[in-house]
Length: 314
Image 1 (cartoon, rainbow, N blue to C red):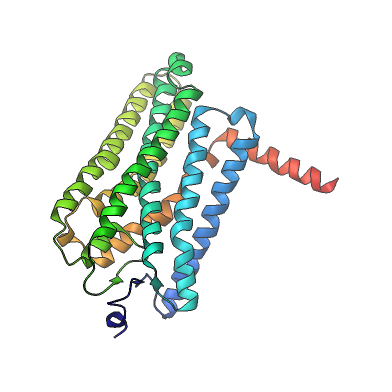
Image 2 (spheres, one colour):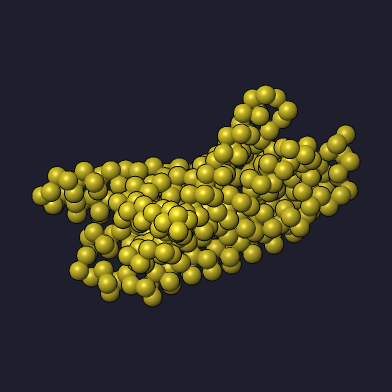
């Protein structure tokens, strides 16, 4: 009856991840903890990069944008989940749903391109160190970050407009924890086959091509490192590439599986499970894998904490 009452309303219903069971309370606590941790980690990362002059390099400039994207992305989804769980309300307005789709696609698409740019930065730094100042200077890094945001926004505008343009004639209950394009298409009462082809093309541009470039970059990095005589360099590079690739697989794998399958092969439970990886878990891992395992970042963090402690003491 609840679904039928909303049939002629502009509001949607987000069925979400949680029910009233005790297990859901534990899962809710886990999601809330991850949210707080992610926002804290990425905020600290941005502050460190902004304050520490020696981190004013193209690599850390791109990392600061990655952290900002992760903050916005998880903040676009989790607070609504928390509010719905605590209030018991599951409705989301048509406009709010549109905002969620727009921000989600902008940040997901932008991050895909940004991760590819970061892998290129590492490739140039390790495989062509003498040409690094020319190939990867401040201008190039600004162009890369700006390009990731711009292309992500343009792609998002197109897909948000198309998705919300489709008529939703039956139930407006979205079996997901946020307004995501595949979950929205299921509710449409018209044939969306042609639009799905457009989503597939976007998937090639934003998912397959960047992930292929990332893999190629890290293969070249490992081949270059293997030619070095230092066993310490081998160990460090293999460790770095291994952890980076885990995050890349966690991000791109579920994302590709969700957005590059036809609508008829989607199941709500599977889509929700996969979305957790690229919307909630990966943003929490990015600062740890890309930054806090770095000695320069840890040293800068210690200096910032010492500086704040001295200021408070005075």
